Image (cartoon, rainbow over all chains, first blue to last red; front, side):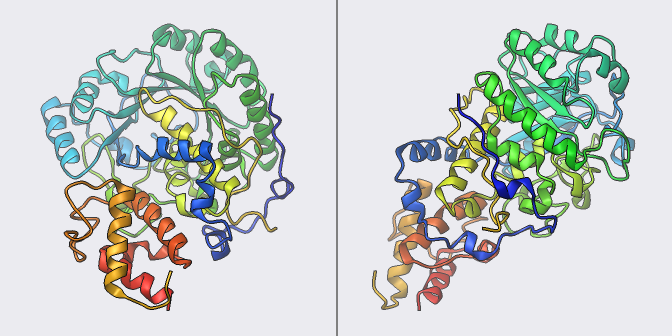
Length: 375
Length: 87
């Protein structure tokens, strides 16, 4: 069993936010060709780069939900008041237009997509690659070929208290047992870190794949779920232990752990590339990404995968999947950071792309994000 | 590598790297229009450009800044950028 070693620099991360490392990070003495001379690295690079064609946008499917969770980002801001467009023909035209402008990957999210399965079907028919974020209370028809991300926030007592839903884990497991589309997304809040072991043990026993999310506070949220430096550190050690204990079921890497439990959020660490924080329309997410409300309109000022989240507190798994992945160039500064980045991308693809299998992690120690290590 | 700046040679080499790394079909270094918009007309995105930049950075022993990507929208612009850096 590999041991996760905490880098000294990570024990006391700098508090000064830096979105871009100094240029030495990308002009280091390590040549890219030298990094790729390691056969394992080359193989993984060739595996992940085949998916560079993915261009995502996200879609709120309805303003309805069948549960109401504390700290839910959907019921913040204006998007919850959008008028629902529930016409499948309108959605088909919309998704066809999305495909024509180059979108190859659809994320169906707020508030609860399983309540509009006919719209999910249309999206899946037009853009075959995608994922659905659901609470798992109601099953999504198997004809919808997207990955299904089922949100778990703790054990049944916690779910009753925070999500106001009874027997939630039981229902989720019943609805998605042996479903190859399903992956459980365990969201670590400040309060549910210790119970994660019990919940994940149950999920693994029932052969579910699990990945991790980190509660990211909506703008203005000051509730008890928001993380503190202590809870981030505790979460990091807990995640690391779980990765070691259940390597076949936990879809995560040590570098995911670093990126999502750092005292600095993703924007400070990597510079968020979503339009909400990125004015450039030339290339990348700033050019192609849109976040549609349930009336099929979008607002560039609010466009990211988790709108109305406080950017300074954003450690959301969906945000990281784009923000960290996009930083290929700066991670190619050394063999260690590049291996860590490959693990992150391999994890992202396994979580988000149907039929993609994660390889073993290449980097087993906690590598700090580029530019974060003062040494 | 030579210190002599030959713009046409750099253009050709950038085209070769682009074709090889991004597995572009139906185009050769000779037929690749150096002024075609790589993003609008070829569909190249940020990860593709980063890959090409890493290879060129190695090959010409230069530094390419992440922030400069948005400027590198044609083969000629990339070649000019590289040429300026190796002077």
